[in-house]
Image (cartoon, rainbow, N blue to C red; front, side, top):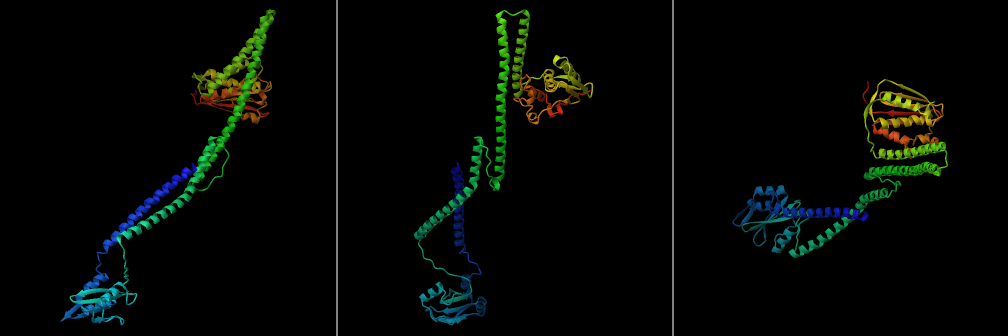
Length: 462
């Protein structure tokens, strides 16, 4: 993957370079053609035109040439000199010519003078003619340089082919090197990101060193995701351990009543028991079977709540009367007939839409926990107002490490070891309230008591 990313980036760089080379070549060819055609359009102020037009200042009388006064002024302004030659190349007249200028020019001399700067490096010589008279004009400081080139079409094509190929190869090599270095710079973080995601996929949550630059926020987010996944993984393992422990406890709880039922059933099967003993054993079997039924009901209910499949039958209920009846039913239970429960409400009528069966179970769970897991002289206060139900006690409280996990399905606190039950009651109560759209919170301090606050959805009030 690393080499694939680098190769793709390198290919894109090379493609850009090739396009740039072709575009630059096209521009250079176009510029060259333009320059060639523009050479034929001579500026009216160029030296060539000036020399050709200078014949208007030359007068020929009886074969003798002379330069007019206006022409001499033009030469002076141009910082130029002139030599007039007859058809034999003999100088017949001159103005401002340098001392070393020859007085006679052979044809080869004229070629040399025109092609090369024979007089000095700052003077360019031009040639013109009028009738039988030829003339040379030298212009100092014209800035014109002549280059003589000899070439053939085939040699030029060969030259361009060889050096053009070398230039293209050199450009491609440079582009490849530059692309390679830039490719490594850009693809190295991408490869690191892919590796990081692969590690996360394999549940490897070790933090990595974050590179700087534009990719820094990406790696920060990846490290944050890794930390969260690691925390979730630890939480999942912890819950898995609690679930296994809970299953073991439930299995033990079910084995105990099953063993009891089996033992008493065998005794009943002997037929040697008195009627009193038979009645007593039947009651024990019934009690143990009811306990097993409670275990199975809790298992079924907690799974339905977990998958949000709890069917609620909502009706409008006066919460004050509803909670009062729960307290009365609790006090009428022999186990709690001596309990100290105080009830008060902010109003006589506070209406909410609830499922009475499930809400009764949730409230009774918190109320019975306050009585069951505290000393017998504990005082419990139940208060109802517009949108909440509060159950508080002055009992022994709950340890901080237990309070943190009090609503988990697979958790039993240290003060419940001697108590029969499935260990699902508090979690089920919380899920029932949340299924009604409410919330529940629990606060506690050891030896100071516990407070459960049930917050309900807003309902009708009177």
